[in-house]
Image 1: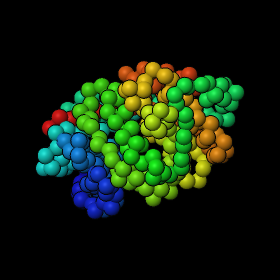
Image 2 (image 1 turned 45 degrees about the vertical axis):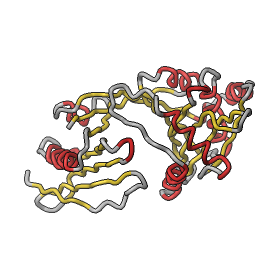
Image 3 (image 1 turned 180 degrees about the vertical axis):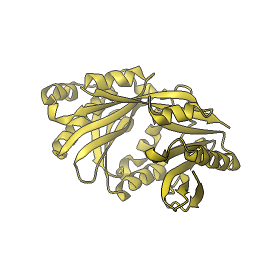
Image 4 (image 1 turned 90 degrees about the horizontal axis):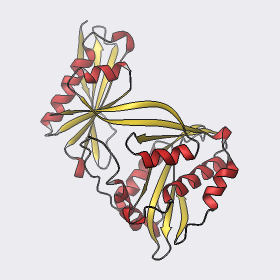
Length: 292
């Protein structure tokens, strides 16, 4: 098969990353595959994240391998230490990455909570259980000004999340970054909803959970992250916040079908929280890493 690779200008540049893109076309200039390489900054300036797709009927013709070569070369030229990519377990992508020098570094378990079957009574019991010294707060979209700094500070709760063998690095958060992240969700037409646990002794945020709802309010919403600061763990705040996030989604978005979550296989604590709230396993995705 004859094909050529064309670099593309990708407008999807974030405040703290940029993205390179390539299109593979056949002799008739018909698209047969794409590759996108996300280049991060700050504490992840060593990392590049690859997304690669080849049309099913064009596979096993060298298109994916050539796109991979181009993307890896670009990562090396940008002085990246590693390239990561994800594929569903047992899929062609899984086999492709394993055969080309990538090593498996993380297993992600995906689960879904069907809202049509939600046990609202059991959920209310979780939410109404007293948590002395803490209260819940929430907001849609961008964090309110009076909570912006403490919310940015609370993001370090994600620094020690189980990432198995992934060379993930540390994401540094400040007020500008949390606002930019919320703005990015808004600009693509989706709705961000955040629930936090507040330490009543000083008004600081002890933990948070985020949910992104499709702009239409239909289909499935996606959990973006749930975390509690180390000094506040052991009080059941993660389950409490997630239960409140579920309640709010169910009440404010009645056309939603379900809520999706993914958790590292080694993060048994968070997987147990999801299991206890009724999330059902859907599939497993593997993260691969190529050390450069």
